[in-house]
Length: 283
Image (cartoon, rainbow, N blue to C red; front, side, top):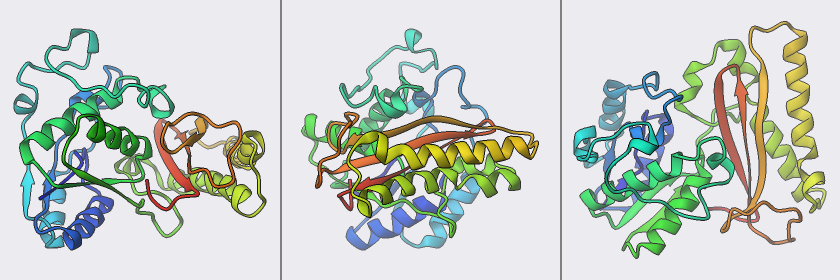
């Protein structure tokens, strides 16, 4: 038995994960659930894409899914749920030491919500294996630690990121982009791959040297967008180089040290994330 991570919008990448899971498992259970505990009051829960009909059709046409779990919010949160964390009641799961950095800086509530809902889904399905997308690299590290520390009898696998032909990572938020925005939104992938190339082909080990081309690419595209008078701006949220196990920011990268090189940028009001792995093939 297997379970796929809770997916607010079932994208092509999720279908790819399901197909991989089907090759390795006798039965595949997929959950489709918009998890309110992952959102803060100021975030886009109400506007977040809900594409159940398309999701359902994609799963059926894939021929890889054995069952679909469609829990209600009232079932997942019997004590009720509010986006205001100070007013929340009931049981929640938190993974200390791995949830406060990177994506946890702008979204300090996020991984608490993820860990809680995934634990509940594990309890419902009782899977032997669980598959998650590498695009959400920090989530994979958090959940692997949660599985280990809670002594859950589950094997977890992080599946490589699905990408468009131009390298853009597939994401439900991509649908917020206009054609003009979409054209330049490869800047993040170009930036982090340039930084990785600095390590692989030029032997860079110091953080400043590694990340320099990434900052330059993002700044160049940002200035070009401004010069063209585009009705949107490019804003860098962060670039990160962390140890793959501890998620500690690295000032110096060891020659064979496994790391995650990641970042987040705003294209207009749409926040995009991506990552590449260093000295490892899988999280």
